[in-house]
Length: 369
Image (cartoon, rainbow, N blue to C red):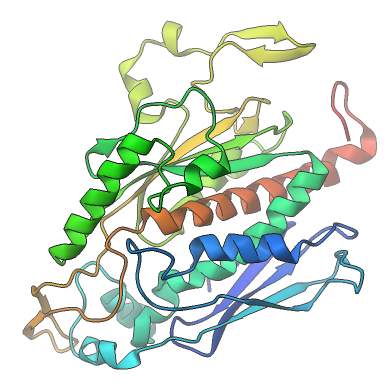
């Protein structure tokens, strides 16, 4: 039913926005990995609601309960890891009108069309509340990658509406990204983005934008030809997130404006390794990582919930006017940053485990097992 992600490192998320809890079961995590509860909490804190004046004011502590899979001395057991996050601050009454009126650009109509029933309060599984479970799983995946190959995943807000930061000289640090509630690491741009989001909120409206993500220190060889290409699975993971409308890797759509002779990444030998002079491929070629930094962008639409009257219809097809109530983000970008990182980590660790399972037992020239 679409609630499971991954092949060798598999997760299943569960729970609804206004139910008792949400959570995740992780299957396939390697044994003997040091489990960092403090890191798990810090990742959830980056995603949780109510963290700044720019986000929904729903108050959730998002304290994780780890139910299984961890030894008393803090190592993963290789068995399923179950993590539960209790919901504490639901206001289901704000959604009463949604029983008889479909919210524009929400999943209300499509869930009814598919299932004939839906969780009206908070949107149920279609709510971004579900992504807390993904961030919890992503924290575990990041920890595995840290100890396995030193891979580092960093995302930040590149633009909101038509306000875009200049390209950074290097990957921003976590401190630079977290310095602003916008999670844009360029201070002058962050100030403009913050003003734009506040303006949209004051008008009962919303804005969208683009998140940039870099996966560094990956070995060459992760991914697979044809259907399981590394970038294809990244795209699927990113477009599984609420409010996403676009994905591009490397040069993306801008690469269509270049000639092939200029777009090609020339191979060179540098530092004892085969590298590329440029990275317009975005760190993959033929669906397999080439050892360069994997770079991609994800486009998020303006939040569908706006606090102003909108025309719609109800399940009976009769026209209605609906003014949304409740607490919502006027821009999802700041809270989506750790979610993008989490999904990137889940794809990466899954491919790392699959690659080792297929190739490590037989060795490989020029590769470390």
